Length: 168
Image 1 (cartoon, rainbow, N blue to C red):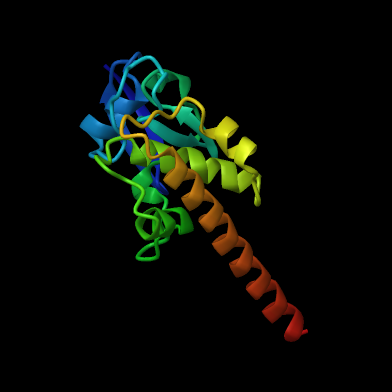
Image 2 (image 1 turned 60 degrees about the vertical axis):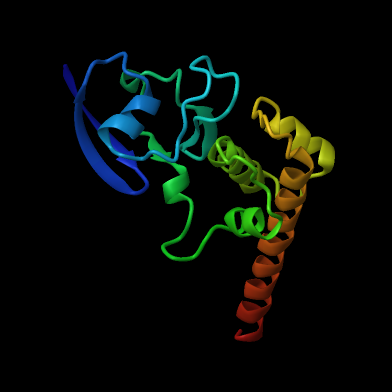
């Protein structure tokens, strides 16, 4: 076993695992972040999606030894304390999940999209979410929730901008 240092959701962890242990199993089994799900083990379904330095990645195929100084964010770290991320709020408002198994991966992929594209089209959402599979078929609600979160985030940005300009 080898010791690795890992920053997850803003906290630093020291873990002793085999170098080829996938990040998914480190997160779930070693650190207790069970929101990240195992789906296929070959990076095809998206259930294990997390952010690695802000980019959505499939944690089931990334060996812990491949991580250096990168920061990992899981679904548990997406909210800001007690304040849910706009995507999480919209997932609830739009009643997106049915079984819910894929939803953490869906939300993490959508959060990465919105971090890079503040107002995605349907086609851009479909492209960004390709590879995140939902066996329940809630794709239309997922797209609606992403649009709703984008609107919510843009409105919050404009509100904050107008308030800061008014105080100048």
